[in-house]
Length: 289
Image (cartoon, rainbow, N blue to C red; front, side, top):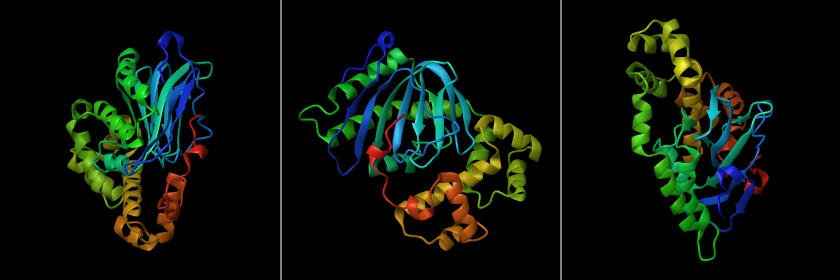
């Protein structure tokens, strides 16, 4: 597939075939004048996706409370279990390129924190530069003689450029030291009650109200919600590896009881813990908008 020029952007896609032990590229393509995903009808996609904005502006919102503006050159990392929406303002223009993928090798990227649930949107490169980097991958995708294993390997090479350690380091250096300390403390917090948050604020050298407001401005969500989402994320990772009961997970993660845990898990992920432990849905039931 040849990626269209920015001046003549059009909708096209490659429906891939085949599997590999590492995972699959399930779909890739471009969308002209996309409507995105409506905010009042958020979507849980069920697999990973990269959405690259090549023209226009808009907004991204998800169930974790992250709400950020979008512009050309921005990249969205769609997490399989997170309800989200994105797209242009009414009457606006939105052109995008996307790649959908799933499989154990991509979960290892999450486990290594190369896929950062705290930062699903970031500015990558100007579209004319980014498309040059992406074109070789699209040119070989689904071509005769190209195996799915080769496609997955190529896509990981692209991801290594998108999520390079240097890019991650540069993004981190733009955030104040107290904020990075707060992220670390909230990541390990066993609760999200006010007493816990006040102790974290004190450790960061701030009063509680000042800490709460400044953290929300930088993270896009208040510290209590961030801590809760990280506990739910740990639950998701545990479920991916073992068949824990709701009671066991509630005890490990500091919830009042198994009912509170199960209710919170479903509210924030759109799935019950049992459903989250199952394999992802068929791609044909969850294509991009």
